[in-house]
Amino acid sequence: MENITLFDPCELGSKQLNNRVVMAPMTRTRTSPGDVPNAMMAQYYGQRASAGLIITEAIDVAPHSKGYLWTPGIYNSEQVSGWQLVTEEIHRHGGKVFAQIWHVGRMAHTSLMPDGEVPWGVTDEQAVGSDVFAHNSEGKLTFVRASKPRQISTEEISDLVNVFRTAFKNARKAGFDGVELHAANGYLFEQFMNTVLNTRDDQYGGQSLENRTRFLLEVVDVAIEELGAGSIGLRLSPFGHYNSMPDDPHGEETFFYLCHELQKRGVGYIHLLYELLPSGNMEQVTEFKELHLPDDFVKKSREVFKGAIIWCGSFTKEKAQAALETGWVDMIAFGRPFVGNPDLVARMKNNWPLTVADRSTYYTRNGEIGYIDFPNYQIS
Ligand SMILES: Cc1cc2nc3c(=O)[nH]c(=O)nc-3n(C[C@H](O)[C@H](O)[C@H](O)COP(=O)(O)O)c2cc1C
Image (cartoon, rainbow, N blue to C red; front, side, top):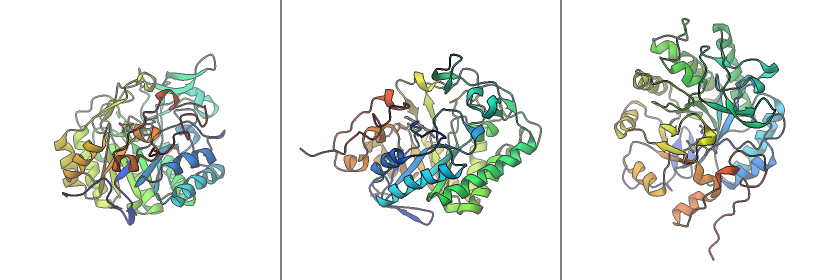
């Protein structure tokens, strides 16, 4: 793997990516009412299309999957039309884009749920100490504690698999090159996989590996039917504690079992991150840091999983280049650097300086400010 650089092309399933720089998924809360993507979002993503691959912000599969106000959906025709604007703009600039699809599970608040119902949980265990972005008791938009969930039934889980199927059909209609399942950071898929949290006694729960990964793999299989294995990626955060995930003594075993199953299915990529620190409250994350997974762990992932591997978390150009040279990973994802540097690829390639975006504009309704107003680098 020597001599591979960040700027070399890369194969992903049947697709050829222009380079190995990935734009990491980032929630930016700029949707139009109805959780509909809009022309401004298309412009934002289009500006960043020189990334080899863009992974969108997390997208809700259904109204009850919502944990944060103003995140987009992909469950009705208006939303699909909105996403068409986005994918067309990215493709017009020569880029590729995967939709990050999630269900937040217990990481939600009754004020965001349809008819004020309680959030959907793997069990009724609350994410004590973790926040979501919703309305407080005075109706003010802010970070509030996740509500206590209810344990969803076995039947609801099977129905949910079909809800994901609709999202994948919609992703195809909207022109996405693929989908990334958000199976990281303490959201629904990860809630199922955690042995401490998932104390269910049906076929989706308990200590058995097969049971704990059943929901995710059922969704993966449906995604493969709709889009083809090479167009599927999974974001995974083994050992993560984000969103009040308890320490899982079987986390490593679960992760490698899953990798093995994904390998059997020929899934396009896995996208690895460790955890965001400090855990639990996005608003308090002034220095939004990510710890790296241990080297041995990433190396072993490569031995088990032969598809592409993306690695994310606090990478600089130099660290990214060194990571590629290990041969354990194929692409590096950058999050915050893409906020202020739409032309991040060119800036890294030419060693031009990077702009640091003001994080107070990450999740605002200020429209263009801190969103589409970052210029490309100008040589003076
Ligand atoms: C504003 C913002 C929003 C984010 N939203 C998401 C998201 O929707 N889905 C997700 O998986 N990660 C999300 N993340 C995490 C990033 O994808 C990435 O893992 C993190 O920023 C670390 O990468 P970096 O050090 O290059 O920024 C978000 C990060 C930021 C800064």
